[in-house]
Length: 567
Ligand SMILES: O=C(C[C@@H]1CCCCN1)Cn1cnc2cc(Cl)c(F)cc2c1=O
Ligand SMILES: [Mg+2]
Image (cartoon, rainbow, N blue to C red; front, side, top):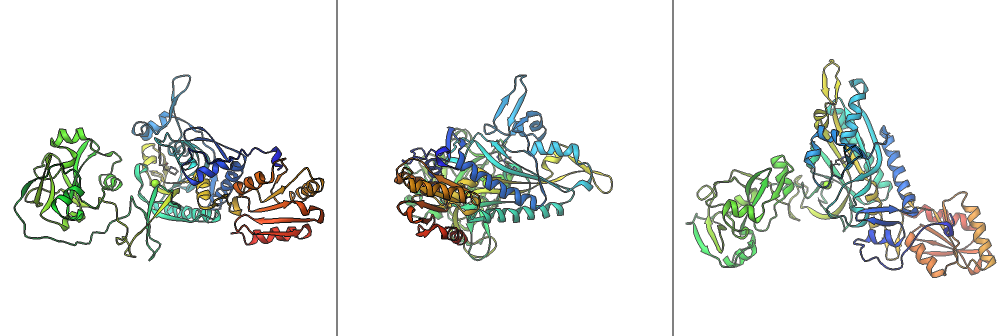
């Protein structure tokens, strides 16, 4: 393609609203334009890369018997009412009303649509298993869209759904998908890790997230060098190894602690370490308030609280809630004398006795508070985030942290949707049973950003060869120079028959062309300049920066050798 005909609005300056490396480069390389917060147009270079990512996804889905369909974004609310999600989802679900006043969701995902489609068609176990997938725009009204395509309100997802007569069959497809995702992300030359994850609102039992390693990633991965153990920190289990430091139980004592509000301030006031303090928090679970006790140096893991109680509706109590329940302020809460609400404690609270806790009275705390004597704990559990260096649940050594971008997720859904939506099949005894389902997503547009996060330098993007928008970038330094122009035109005509060629034939200054070429990041660049008369061109490797001067008779093999060793 001639660049004089192209549409690549590169930017000289870093856009101020770009809040991540990939977001900056997508804008600077003229690949996206924001239309609204979290809503983007994909421009030609981005569209070509998306096409290649999608065709790799398509290939690997079809390789495991996935069949492509395309479902509508407009989803009748009736189907979401059948699954109960019309009521349970809030502002994130984009809703609209048609001219007849009928309500629709703009699809954030397609469990309801696919289940209603399959329940009418696949009635016998003989027709199972089936795996259907689509690649399509999704809509989610994120509260804070950011990082460009990493967290948008309209984005491209590959979502696949599988239907089974048995758990064993689901396990097989789950494993096939897991392996296919590993192939896809390897072909994209991404550094990634599958991690044990929390299934959250979607329900189901078993799920893995595929994380692209990147500092900008919003997820924290816990992994060890001792094995391929890796878990999203939301889910990383803390194995409780008792380390009791109990002393003689002392008399409960109320201490005046003026201005002490935080665990650290209490630790300082009492001249103790933070880990000898116990924090008390009020959490609203569904519509019940409960108190959690947790060591001063730990953080409450709301995802673990949700899965302990089996509900998504878990949030910290507000100050007003707290005042109405305990007639105290959040800065001085404690378990002593609390009997209106249940008290849960993280396992490691058991290691201490004679606890320092709030007295449910401003500027007062208790010391020597002891469980069973001064308060009761309804249950101990793993309610906290693991700390870096603590032992991994599989015993393979201390966990390390890394940031990740969730680019894929595979779920064993079970019968959550087939039961609520009555998608049954006749089993081999002629009895109707709910289908067993799996669902599997890849964030296609998010993956594009993840590739850029991992493949760039200070001059721009460096595309992995599998998804580069073009294979060869031919640049004529000075098209006004007859000889240069003719040679460049000739090379374009020759090489476009065997490579995808972007030909910068613009009447722009050389510096502008080279800057743009660095931004756009095509692996191999052929520069037709002063030595055109002698048939000499410069060939440059975008990743290493190495440039060689070659006669056009050796150009083909030079390009091939760069591609052969590019990664
Ligand atoms: O989407 C999934 C699960 C899988 C992921 C892979 C492909 C199939 N779906 C989870 N999820 C995430 N955000 C959502 C946001 C809204 Cl507003 C909603 F209404 C529903 C969902 C929702 O269900
Ligand atoms: Mg997640």
